[in-house]
Length: 224
Image (tube, rainbow, N blue to C red; front, side, top):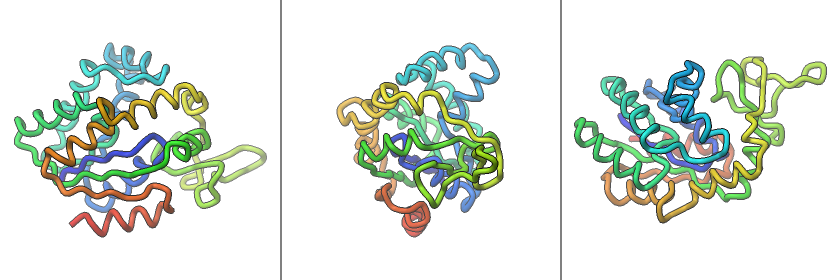
C-alpha cells in the first residue's frame, strides 16, 4: 500500500501518518525528517536545505526531489506513506512521472483540511519531543497538553524533553509556509488537485479541526 498525505502545517498530518504507519506497517517517509537527517549529517544537500527551511521558504526542487525519490525507492517492498512532499505543482508532476517510471502505484491520497488561522495557532503552540517528533504535544489543547514537572514541560507520551522549533514561533515564517500550501495555482493545493484529477488513487478528505481520534477513525474506515 502506497499513500500520499497532504495537510497544512499544523493540521496534525504527521500524527495521523504515524498512526497509519503503525496500523499497516508502512514506511513513514516525511520530507522534514529527510531534511533533518541530511542537516544532522552535515551533507551538502542538507546545508543547502537548512538555509531555506530556516527562512520558511520552499526548498528548491533540485535539492528536494533527489532526496525523496531515493528514499521512496528503498521502500518499494514494504509500502510507504509520503508526508510533506510534493509541495508544488512542479513537484507533483515530477513525483507522478517518477512513480510511473518505477512501476509504483499510488493507492490512496489523504487530505487533511484545516482553516489557515487555526493552523497557525496550532503551529505556535506545538512542542517537539526529543525522542519522537510524532508524539503530539500542544500547550493549548488539554487532550495533548505536555506533562509539567517543577515548572518544566515534558512529552505526554514518553516523558522526553520538549522544545519549540524556532520557525514555529516566527509568524512571518509561518505565513510563508502557509502561502505556499494554500496556493492553488502553483503551490501545494495545486499539487493536491493534480493528484485528485490525475493519479487515479482513492481520495480521502477529512476535517482537520476534529479530535485526533475522530480523524484517525475516519481515515482508517476508508483505507480499504
